[in-house]
Image 1: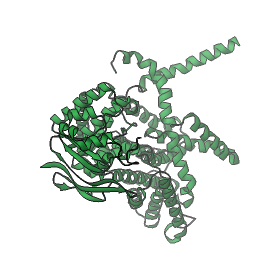
Image 2 (image 1 turned 60 degrees about the vertical axis):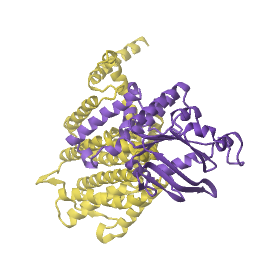
Image 3 (image 1 turned 30 degrees about the horizontal axis):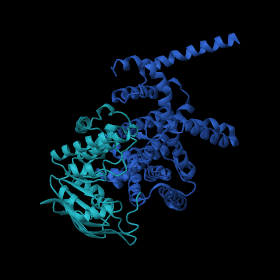
Length: 260
Length: 357
């Protein structure tokens, strides 16, 4: 049984077919990589999974349930966490508050129970703070737990974003180019951290440009090109696949391969 | 020249003594510790309790009653603007709904004011819910325009439906606020009423903003995509805080009607809305102390300037512009950073270096 399965999904923007009947499965407990040249439709696929955009046709099953029509926050509630391609931490909060805000869906209690600060709220807030500090500790961000998140350097902000996604205890974690803009050492630390996340039982679906990293950590890789799935399999098999080499080495149809 | 210099030094020294005393109580802004903040709150509370006894001047009392009521109003708007990062230019309408609910229930139907007080909050909240559902999907300027439109529609309804609201003349004869036979009939009693209600609502808001609710609001303000990616229901968070802010406005309106013993449409015009928004912006967004400080400052400023007759508005606007230039993120925030920073810096430096704080 696969955790996430995408069935014949199509998405068009103003007549440009960003995704063309893509079917994909992510098995539970795996790290799945998604690669492809620029403009291949990777980000579109991610937006569709996290619910920011809706597909034109096709459906998304998560744990055998159809989640195609759910809003983004409802998808988070069933257990899909994500990070963003451009870092989207909350700069108006402290580092630890960022993590605690990430726990939002796990903290119970309504509006008034928080306003009156009932004893169980006091307890749950205290526990949340403790847990947030543990998460920060595992990301080695604990030294900065009280500084504003906007004051962190870029690499730490990316880590914080990862920590926030982990704070909601997702079953499936979508990572959108986690290595972009990081230094080589930071990338090494990150891949180690991702492997550790997988050992903790979280399934990871990762879009990445940094080929070395994704080949190293992924169990399975899917390759998108011009909105079509051209290869799927283990990293070694994908590397040898002639269609993949073709896509990466030769230029595809003009306009689809423009670089940013 | 020499003598003058000496004088200055002497005066500086006299300033330093109370500042040093203050520094013992003032919190250290370097560190964000909840315990420190509690101490500051206690300090403010004592000041609020003692202020009218130190200045036993009815005019001052009345002014502070108004300031307290406006503070309730801007506190609610401050949550919506400063925390959730939205904008509302129709907040005066909810104030008006509260005032008219109280006026109609007490002056027409002779219900007890205490009951009308809660009914005002409920009616304001209910209307906010009905308005907010569709309107809060808008963002930025469009939200500002929509709320502005709502405020104007409310005014037109109040002016035209003469049977219910008394038209332009309004409703007179709202009784003093009373609880279980105790009537708040002097300015001093009203002072404690208004500031008591404010204190309660302030603590409620403070609990909200330091917990899950406040974090969700700040998250919505900074990035809605990221907020929904961790499971925060963005439209619901906005609607909740809009309804709460409107309920605060309803309570403030109810108190206003009782204190002024009247409700008329003049009080809820566009000018009043901008005044509240100014209170929030001048006081400081993203803090709950700011709107209260802004409310006190502007009420006091308007009162002082009212004796300059036709020059009052130009002077008022110049002062506002200067304040916005020198305190762009609000007097509440900036004062915390500037004054208390300076005061608290030396006194706590040693402790901080030793790592005790």
